[in-house]
Length: 511
Ligand SMILES: NC(=O)C1=CN([C@@H]2O[C@H](COP(=O)(O)OP(=O)(O)OC[C@H]3O[C@@H](n4cnc5c(N)ncnc54)[C@H](O)[C@@H]3O)[C@@H](O)[C@H]2O)[C@H](O)CC1
Ligand SMILES: [K+]
View 1: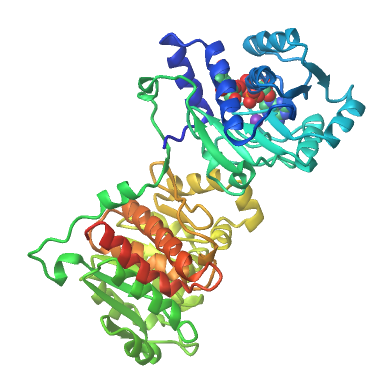
View 2 (view 1 turned 180 degrees about the horizontal axis):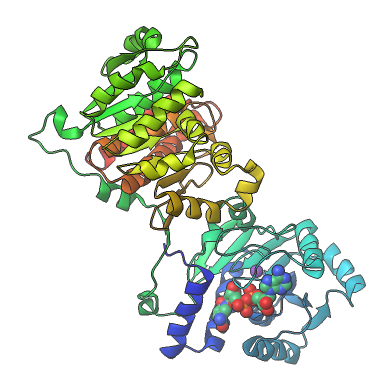
């Protein structure tokens, strides 16, 4: 699955044009592919169809679709949202529409007629804006989008629902909600990023005749995580091996009242095959963990009067850190001066890859620049509220710009950033973005993040590079949750139960 930005799409189209496929033909193919997609779902004969068109090439695709739908026996009307088209190929195509006597209305001047048409419409084609859209919908386009969003009709968006930034999914107010989106040639980041992805409905990617080699020189920066790639990252377990072959994870987690977080993170690491997991936790909670975690070993730590790790524990931790092949800090450690000091110490001193989760991230908010002092790769796994806290903005402000902000952060602080949520995003220090599409709302429960942190850290402990560990952890966590939901339901499944389904996935892949 190829995901390209709007600029990259332009380069691909240019390469196609140089190789002999004209822009006019690409537009014809795009409109035709959209009509084929509609015809596969709905018999359009005698159906009342409104095609909303903008002034650019997306509108041009709409004119092609209008002509071909008319030829297929539908009752088609075209609505110009921004007046007459401005691009050469779109102008040619509106002229063809007019020669077929398809009625063309102006959104503003013909509002009364359009209001009547909207009472009885079966299908709406949204061809107002595609990859050329930036910023906010203007008043007229908002009005058109409101008409589309309130009409009782099947809505097909061409390339993208109008009002969405293709490259990062930023949404304008009143952006179109489509039932189906037909993406042209390649998918765009916005098709994957929530909440924009919700506006797309069912997404199809249509071939518009661009030869495969026209994509060869594009340096992709946005990837979809696949199962094949995930298992390429996970080596077979050698026959001649012992627990030392699969890494030692030092997991600094848990506090009084939050022992579940520590336990789940240990289980996550163990279930991805880590050789040995040491849980370093406040002394008073060790007995609770020892009763539940048969295969782990424990490092009882000095604690403060709140039952969380005290800074007095730093020498103990430092000693154990020397043996670790990876370190995880944060699941349920509580957020206070002591845990912040421990987190800082770990960041400054760990020579092995480090994963910082939950309260470890909250501790970072006190001094984010400590990340510049890390000596080994660092992975952060915030949920949106934690990420927003790190950035000093509101969660709402983060969510409308999460792709930009996530990418900037990972590059600036040289970390792998796992921004959790529906379609979790992974940002790398090199500026690449990975999107994961496994997982479901059954994961939206306390405990699932702790399992994920343990899984990623467990892969890191086994020597899988930080970025690939994040990729494997996020994908498998979601996929196991999908299997778990299929047998237990999204509503009832418990995060800990997905660990059983993880076994099935490893079995299927001969691990
Ligand atoms: N290149 C080709 O020949 C092909 C393109 N395809 C389709 O074309 C669009 C991209 O077309 P483009 O003309 O670049 O942009 P749009 O049609 O998406 O719209 C751009 C149009 O709108 C203006 N604009 C941008 N933001 C706003 C705003 N907030 N308010 C108002 N107006 C705005 C902008 O200035 C332009 O004038 C692509 O998605 C495909 O659908 C074909 O697929 C094949 C060949
Ligand atoms: K569109």
